[in-house]
Structure formats: C-alpha cells, structure tokens
Image 1 (cartoon, helix red, strand yellow):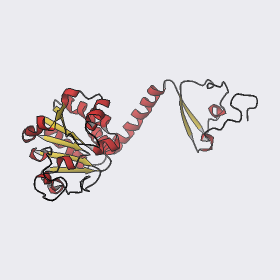
Image 2 (spheres, one colour):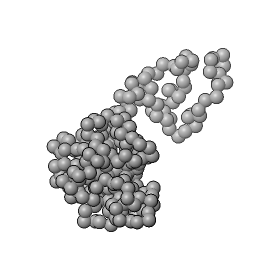
Image 3 (tube, helix red, strand yellow):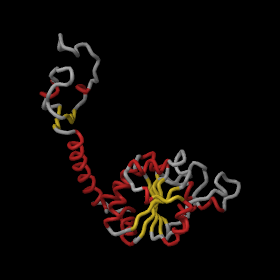
Image 4 (tube, helix red, strand yellow):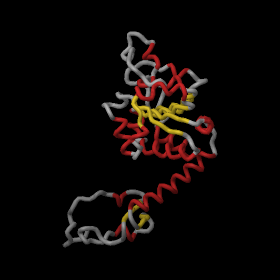
Length: 246
C-alpha cells in the first residue's frame, strides 16, 4: 500500500493473515527500508517483545519451561523411577546415539550432565566409533554442546568399566549397545564390538520406540525389565521431562 517507498510492490511473507503474531524485535524503529510497519500498531493481533532477541527469547522459553515442569510434576510415570535410579547412583555413563542426533538433544544432554554433577555424581560418556552416520559424529555433536572432550571415552577405553558402573543412560542408541552382536549368528552385527552396557547395574534407555536399530536385529535388553528401564518417545521431549523432575 505504501507507494513511493523502497518496498512498494516487493513480495512479502503474509504473516498479517495469521490469527496472532508474536514479534521479537530490538525496538519499534522501521526496518532497513525505513518504512513504518503497521503491524506494530495492531494491538489486537500482535504481541511485541522488545530488546535483544536472545535475552527475550531466553525469558520466554524459561516461562514456557516452568509451565511444562508444573505439568510434569503432577504426573508420575517411568521418569520418576529414572530419578530414583539417578539418586541412587554415584557414577553414570551416558551413551549417545543417532537418535540423539535426530532429535538434536545434545544440549539437553549437557544440561543433564550439569544436573548430575550438582548431585555429586561422576559423569562420563561412552562413544562407539560407528554411532551415528559417520565416524566421529557423536564427538562433533557433543562438542557443539560444550561438553568437555576429556569426558568422552572411546569404546576400548571404557568398555571394562561398565561392570563397575551404577547406572548407564542410553540416548538414542541401539545397534552399538546390542549384546546380540555376541550371539546372533548370520546377522549384520554378529561379531561387531559393542559397548558393554549390559554389564552395568541398571540401564535407562531413552529411545524413540522398540524397533530394532539400523541393522534390523532385535535388542534383548528391551526384554530385561529387571535391569532396564525404557522411556519411549522423542529424546528431546523425554529428556525435558527428566530435567524437570530432577
């Protein structure tokens, strides 16, 4: 509508057609073209959050998280049992896998590490060399979340320690922890070295579902209800719930 301005006739995103709009902008000044935006005046349709976008979004997300946590606290499920097992543990090994990569949950894993450490729990990471879709995939993702490289242990460095570990937390890993690799002849994973999570006292598995991994071999850990607690669903959602409970 604004003839004789730099943006007149320029195709734009039709956000004005939406039922409501949240705008996180630094101030109310016009954009680069210097043309006033009538959306700023539409109080019924637009809610404006002014200031540095990172700060306002952080405050916005914290408010959302508080609401989510209040809902989580009202329900009791497998997450409560996970918290009990965590509180009993003095040392924990976290095993990340491709499911963590898919759900982009590495930053939540870092938050989990911080929570566990605040409880005085020793935390380490067990990295299988083929976890993910390329060598070093897990190392890269965990580095993105500022997890200390000194906490990352390759399989041959940590495999013997599982038998002395109170708790293992698996996040989106399947084939690389599947003990069937030692017994299931004529399968794609037979003979493949795996992380010895089955030797730990207890295992929490945060996986999307109970389907076999990429190799298509069922994981007998899923049937061991005495030693294993399964929490199914998207890792980012289930980890969020766990962090709230903790």
